[in-house]
Amino acid sequence: MTYRQTLDYLYARLPMFHRIGLPAYKADLKNTVELCSLLGNPQEKFQSVHIAGTNGKGSVSHMVSSVLQTAGYKTGLYTSPHLKDFRERIKINGKMIPRSYITRFVRKYKSEFKKTEPSFFEWTVVLAFDFFAAEKVDVAVIEVGLGGRLDSTNIITPVLSVITNISYDHTDILGKTVQKIAYEKAGIIKPGIPVVIGESQKESRHVFIKTASKNHSPIFFADKNFFYPELRSDLTGSYQRKNIRTVVQAVELLRSAGFILTEGELKSGLANVVKNTGLMGRWQTVKKNPLVICDVAHNEAGIAEVIRQAKADCKGNLHIVFGTVSDKDTGAILKHLPKSARYYFCRARIPRALDEKILYGKAEKFALPGETFSSVKKALRAATKKAEKDDMILVTGSTFVVAEVI
Image 1 (cartoon, rainbow, N blue to C red):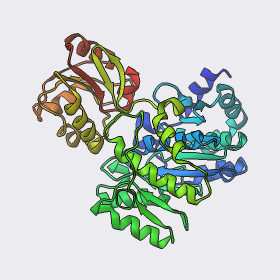
Image 2 (image 1 turned 45 degrees about the vertical axis):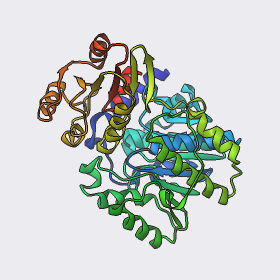
Image 3 (image 1 turned 120 degrees about the vertical axis):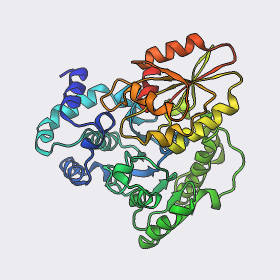
Image 4 (image 1 turned 60 degrees about the horizontal axis):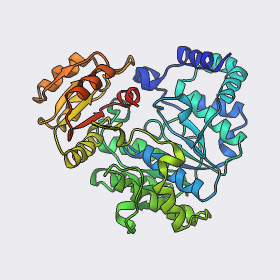
């Protein structure tokens, strides 16, 4: 099988949550445990840092990875979803997993897929663990896919757990209250393992304290416990200040766990996240004339942060290329969008995408002016034609919309 045939085989036979949503979600760890056992439990052969949260977990994962590799550690990084290339999900020191490794792995374990029928995500997690073990990484930064307690990544025993924050997202799976969502995220807290909470929130704080206490796990609220000098990152979104604070607290605890991480390496790692890890889609400038910014914000809290920065940075008129998926609380997101902007409602090329005409109908209830486009490409082209010198075009609402622009 060629690499392309390998991916086609996997996409055709394994359900993929980010494409079809709830039907692909497996609410237990049985398949992951079974497959990892078959492989000799590769997740036990390297140290790891486990990172969960509603927003910011991708940025924090890449930041921590950048700091570790700057300090000379051979660092694995597992994240999801990908934007352009499947291999973005699995990296070592910023370099993507080779195509040949993926092809060999699938060929070797093809019969096991038929027996266990794992989801796309379960398969990808097992592949990542196998690759990191084979390459003898010093440490791997593992981002949770969805939730925490029942996420496939939650079979690791990390040296540190991190939960960035809690907001409303995937409520059909994780629960419809902050407390229920926090309970699912808190599921990554392991006995005796320190945990960092990025943002202390009244509704979720007690959930984390209770779970940490039950597990005898030291707990640190980064926004309460840690004071730090102003540190800069090449991730320029204003919301990254919260993530930097979380990373600084995490680095302090990694030092306590025996990792040698100097202040200079911390500063350099934060300043070179994109260069070191290849992170995309976080307040990313993809064009300057007119200015086109892409951000993968896709839930209520994330959109609110991005719009706040857009209002602050836009010198002229704001044009927003916007699309989302059908299983989101669209109304909760749309209420944060400014009525003064011009909208280009579109649909990404995935089955889960919300029809642009339905989206337009929902947006009308919030008095958001705009037009509909059958593709992201057409929407961006229209926005580019209308944008003048000092205007900003913001592409957001869905990872998949951003992926098509990048």
